[in-house]
Length: 250
Image 1 (cartoon, one colour):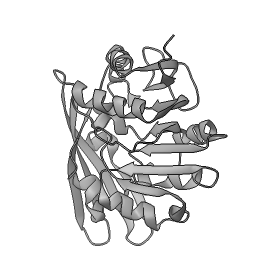
Image 2 (tube, one colour):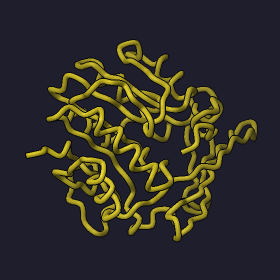
Image 3 (cartoon, helix red, strand yellow):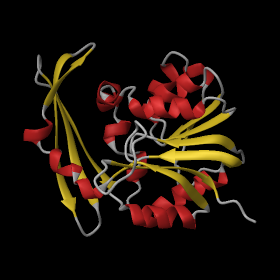
């Protein structure tokens, strides 16, 4: 995971993030999980939309390695209710435990090696209350979603509140040996032609590998979901979403 990916660190690119990644079914699902929780740790909180909402009813800590994303989070309505921390999920150590730990927006996929993924999962285990729950999402590699991340499939027009119409598209190269997709994100302001772009990487991890890593971290899964509507996880589900907790020792 790079701390200097301009997609998350460059304010010129961060300004488009919520336009494409705003509130959706994942946030609805997590808000339901958070009902009754006294404390929530939002790892990879991004621009903080979910964390700020959850902080209306419980204590919330939002963590992200990107200062530009946290700047948006702190400035949003309700941002003053959240404790925002610049940090990396692989080595975060707060000496605190939480009722619910979230890692949404496919943030788990930015960890590009099994070692980094295991480190993030161990961080979850270290910060989870004995009866607490965790949830995260990762795209199912069997669906090969990266095939849609090419200009002819991904091109769309979005509306920026200040810049007006913006043309957005992606391009991608996928390495089957590592499961890593290297993808480009492009934004072109229609009125001026101004062009912003970034190159990022994410890893597509098969379900059996995720299961092994989760177990090695001292966690267990009580339910696998295949989407954020609570559908079952099948071989052709777009998402791999584990909900679980700490392994309870006898």
